[in-house]
Amino acid sequence: MNELRNLHVPGKPLVLPNVWDADTAQLVVEAGFPVVATSSGALAAALGYGDHQQAPAAEVFAAAARIARAVPVPVTVDAESGYGLAPEELVTALFEAGAQGCNIEDTDHESGLLIPASDQAGRIAKMRAASTELVINARVDVFLHEDPSLTGAIGRAEAYLEAGADCVYPIFLPGEHIQRFLDALSPAPVNLLCLPPKTPGLADLTKSGAARVSLGTGLWRAQQQWLREQLAAMRA
Image: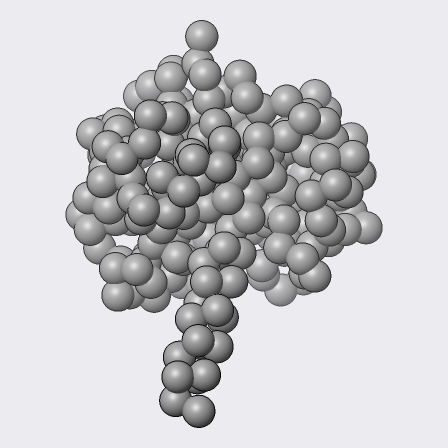
C-alpha cells in the first residue's frame, strides 16, 4: 500500500509545513510530521529565482533530491505546472529525485491563463498512466484568476479526479465556499491552504473535512520576516 496516499483522510488531515531545503526538511521530520512537502515559491527563492517556473527544472529537481536524501519519510514535490516537461518525463524526474508525490498546477505560466480543464485532465491521465504509485495532488487555480467560479472549480476538480488525481487542491478557496466544495467532491480527498489571515486556520480546515492541509510559503515568509527584523536591529 502507498504510505503517502493512505495519509489523506478527510477530517484527519495530513498537515504539510512546506520546506525549501534539506535543513528545513529535517526540522519538519524532527517535529514529528510524517511527510515532507516542498514549496515551489520558497524553494525557488532559496535557489535565487522567482516563483512561477522561473527556476530551471534541473535545479529544482536537484534540490528536491537533496531534500529526499536528507529525510526518512515520503517527500512530495511542488512541480508547479511541470516545467515544460512531457507528463511521462515529469514522472521520471520526480522518481529520480526520490519523490513519492507531486503538486501539478493548472496555470500556464507563459500566458498567465488557466490551462483548459480538458487539457489538464489529459496531462494528469498521462501521468497516472506512467505510474500508479505517484501521489498526484492536482491544484485548481480558479481563485487565482479573474472572475473565479465555484462551479468551475468543482468541475475542474471532478475532471482531474476522474483522470487519476489522488487529491485536489483549490488554492485560496474562499472560506465561505469551503464546505460546499468539500461536499461536492466527497469522499475524494481535498487539500486546503492554511495561510491565515488569508485563509481559515488549521482547526477550522480540519473541522470542515479537509484531507490535507498545506502551509504553502507560510514558514518561509515567517523566517524572512524574522531575519529582516534581526538585521534591522543590528543596523539600529
